[in-house]
Amino acid sequence: MDQTWIDMYNAAKAVLGGRTISEYVTAGEVSAAVRSKSGRIYVGVCIDTCSTLGICAERNAIFNMITNGENEIDRVLCIPPNEGKGAPCGACRELMVQLMPGKYKDIEIMIDYSKGKAMKLGELTPEWWID
Ligand SMILES: [Zn+2]
Image (tube, rainbow, N blue to C red; front, side):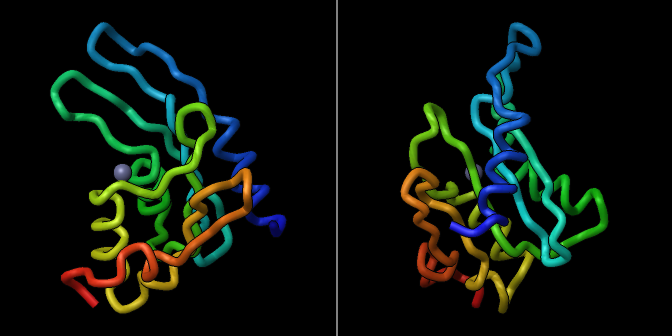
């Protein structure tokens, strides 16, 4: 595994940690790091609410990247509950596809950090409605 994945893992780990925000909102049980094409790493945590206002950690990290003026993703890493393995949900894949039409298939996604297994979004999402 290369140093970039390790740096992304450490960045995501630094913000990981479940917390209760209010009686309706919890956050931080999942965290994610997104590396932009410029090489900067942006992080986000999941935010869960009682009425679907929340967001996945991956999309939160992507929105953080956009907030900071960037719009091209190079890599995505997520730390799921219990540090298990996991692929981005359909909504997160959809956002990446719409953000980078024609290029999203090259985004690298860490599927299982403990085994160093990464896949391209094009392998995970081969027949999407946008090429
Ligand atoms: Zn998601």
